[in-house]
Length: 365
Image (cartoon, rainbow, N blue to C red; front, top):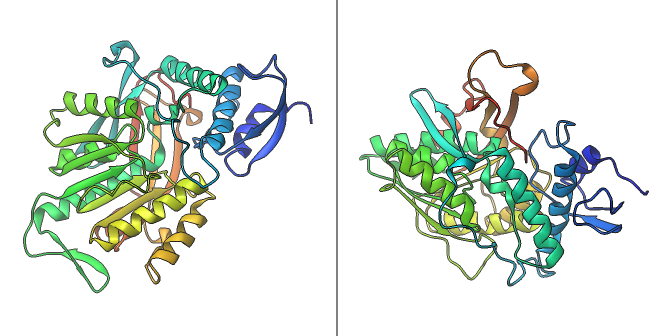
């Protein structure tokens, strides 16, 4: 009861809230006493022992804060917004990674360096300690669900550009004339899916409730000459007072990790479908997906909301030379496509999206 093994804490806090007692000497910025661990969006490798103890304890603390940053009515607490970030990014903290989305389409994405990831976790803990702004460090690296979402978005955009898409008989089918689709990404983070759609020719609005990930996305767009096709904006899916921006296609990945966010996402999907937008939601099988599906069924009775009909594979490894199996991750990702269309027909595990990180650069979070 006095100590909780860190890897176990990291593995469990995704699935159920729990109470443990953290010794002051072990937990940075945490006083000894009961700690309520909430839900943190964990990487599939989060429970592995490769993490430094300080980072793991810090991530556990951020997990606790994730629960307290939501009010009892299920909305984010007023004032718990993103902390200010420098207007100019430090080039030393930016790492270029490349994702081979589909054959012929490789996209550059910018992640925070490992050291910067560590600092962001420390800042998040300090913010929790002082009651400051809610700092979420997870948007500065690329997660597996985003890789398969990029494949799904690419499938939609390719057909939309060539022939257009029409909804007929509950499915999206090729239309009679192509055009430039408008794509909206929610919780974009580093923005791989947004950048992939823009590379193919779509007009993209990438949103997040934090400014920092959008700055990384903007820099990646600039380095690839995509500034004219990619716009960014702050948008909180949990803020019901804000209407969903217009788009032909609404996309999101890994946004059903908390019950509150899962329910909010279901409302956004219903909002998008009622106005005629197509929707792509990528998820690795988070436990709170069931709340998303339950709310979606309530809002859109009879909707064909089935993640199992479309799935892909996300591979992450270091670039160059022989890569040990221990440094390669493979994660199966499922995609909900409403209505079923190009992604369901195209995205397959046999054709994975492969992310290549430079040697020495790791996903610390």
